[in-house]
Image (cartoon, rainbow over all chains, first blue to last red; front, top):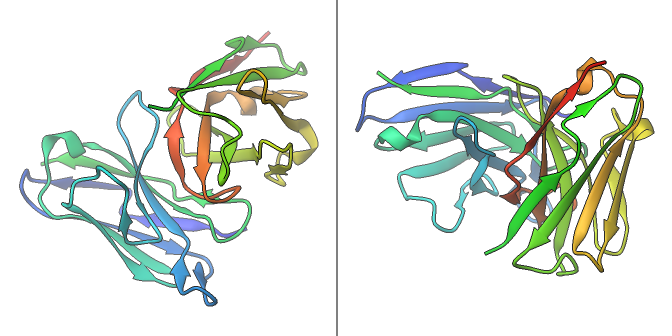
Length: 113
Length: 121
């Protein structure tokens, strides 16, 4: 199974500042035949199901604000929120869908400083 | 707008079978390129994929749960279901039904609100 490890476990950022969350997979999730990274990011607010933000490592889901961006390839990935808003307080998860079973990182809790 | 809604008992006794149903509205469960799945999240913890099903009945399970899990689909009711047998305290979690877009374990673009299942005698 592919193990996903996020860092940091928690993060406090001031409103309007940049937030960066990292995700590392235990093996590459880059599929060479199509050059796609099988990596997604979700945001989960308290008491709600997760919401898909990014897939293919860097493609924003429809309706997701452009302050959210994803980058990286192979085994190392980053989710960046360019200007933190109050509604971004949540837990963020990365997920690989390169191989079964799909697996999630342990989550990064993002708070306002 | 697609909506998914979980239903089923919120309390299950140890060693018994957990049964949940997901009702899909606002779209057809027989749409191509979508798979229908279940995930769970123990209180305060992370997410675990349980498995998924295509409307044709093809199923895909997490190997760690495969021996105890059955997912089925009822296209006439636009529903799919989950059964987990021989439950223990470790199965206590919020269970989510979900739609995978593009593949049997591809990212989830629609989620149910989730239902908490407690395992206790």
